[in-house]
Length: 118
Image (cartoon, rainbow, N blue to C red):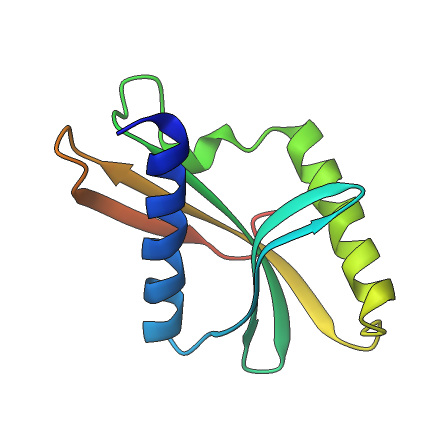
């Protein structure tokens, strides 16, 4: 399974997990001129912008640790754009990072969510 296919599988696993936790998925792969947001969901009354990260090994760190400061800034700009387009400035918001570690057979070994990650 190549990197792109693994990423798509990770986003599917993430969406199913979030729904099982009571999140309501609003958007998947929201694209705009500023880039792409993996998942946008509601958790009760909070609009959650979710970055999904996956890896096959934790040798060089966990997947959720790979969200750099630059990526965080890009996601903040994307969220602002989304709020403007959807006229949702009144909503409470947060950024979550969901990390999925797969084994060599592409089975989920761990799934961790960092709520309010940045």
